[in-house]
Amino acid sequence: DAKTTQPTSMDCAEGRAANLPCNHSTISGNEYVYWYRQIHSQGPQYIIHGLKNNETNEMASLIITEDRKSSTLILPHATLRDTAVYYCIVRSPGGGTSYGKLTFGQGTILTVHP
Amino acid sequence: DAGVTQSPTHLIKTRGQQVTLRCSPISGHKSVSWYQQVLGQGPQFIFQYYEKEERGRGNFPDRFSARQFPNYSSELNVNALLLGDSALYLCASSLFAGGHEKLFFGSGTQLSVL
Image (cartoon, rainbow over all chains, first blue to last red; front, side):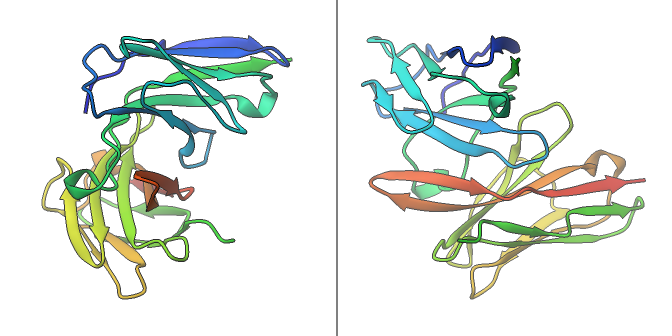
């Protein structure tokens, strides 16, 4: 799985958009970008994934650059409950020997303040 | 629907002892993975089981073992505990659909080794 680089921490005001960047310059053609988050005292939670097109779901939007070397997770209206560690993970879609395996980095600690 | 459940939630052991952690996956999920999360770090992959067979193993010593039962629940065993085994142990079950795997994590078992 390709290595990712994320800022250690970020702050965001409640109600504003939170934009979390991720660099993955060694991503290969069949690898997807996945985002998970971990709220304190809980297990990680899936947020979104994408290959090369922008993706949106009920939780967030994912913007992937055209060269696929970086991406941004967008929480459009951050709330206090979005305070968590956000992990950007690059991997193949799953199956075979990679089934069930995610390679977590340090992630970004997002703090949403009132 | 019930999520991934883990027991116990907290556990205190002494060095040299053995411990067994339990995990029940989401109904219908046949894959279970185990992760270790040391304070301040992202989760690290230990094992993955699918249909009662080990399909993946991370870089952990032989003191760590696991098994999966016919009902797809799983146990993680750690022998000869060391102080460094103190961590949050996370279990995840996964669903492979639409060409992608999505992991669902439990809240973990916090193991303290004294």
